[in-house]
Length: 296
Ligand code: HBI
Ligand code: FE
Image (cartoon, rainbow, N blue to C red):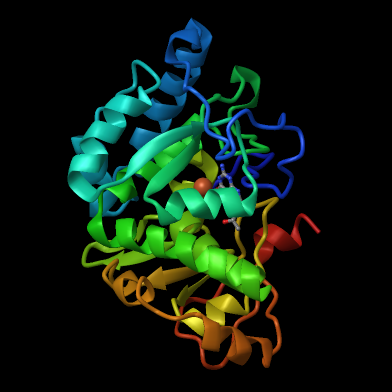
């Protein structure tokens, strides 16, 4: 089915945390400085919020919709992290803390392991609504926080933080980060009424929320842990493959898993390119690959 996709494309979580100042606090947190947002900042939030709320109807999973409905988040203003945290904490024990942008991996993991989600305090510029070098308040808060209201995702993301600290010590972070990428950021879930988005990287992107579900270009494959740990991903464009959970509850098992033995198994196997499809994959969509072919 033809979908017209405006260019250029979202980039998210590029690798550099380079242009940030050295932090005042060791955990990189800052005051959100809510009173410093300008009318333009709130206007950007409103534009994005309204566009994305429209697009996510029938596209976001039920848990996302429900989480959003119960949070003090509305189009009119960028949310105050303290008010968000009050509601979130009561539900799943998570809090939102403000950071200047990307923070070093170990700092990021330490926050997650303690059920604190670091959210960029700034918002993108009105002339670059679809371009991001670092996660901003719209990606982090609109994209991630609704799913943190879900008990399984709440436990899974904490476990990723704790696992991240261990993976770093083992030199296996690349393999673990792929799990986060293909679930928390770019995950899809099969609902009774159809395929739905739960990943924040998709949910916060106007173009990718259509592409991920409706374009014939990408592969859509059943989620399989070791398979995902072998699969490289794109940080500069839409994904070439999405991995689909049968249920968000499937992440429950992953929140308790010991990844250490898996790293050894996975490293004994070849790495996979983002577009590859294996005979062992459960293929929901075999992608045409036309979108990325046209951009090479
Ligand atoms: N920092 N603020 C922020 N947000 C992220 O999503 C983030 C980060 N630092 C490191 C990081 N993500 C990833 O590279 C790790 O998940 C591997
Ligand atoms: Fe993110």
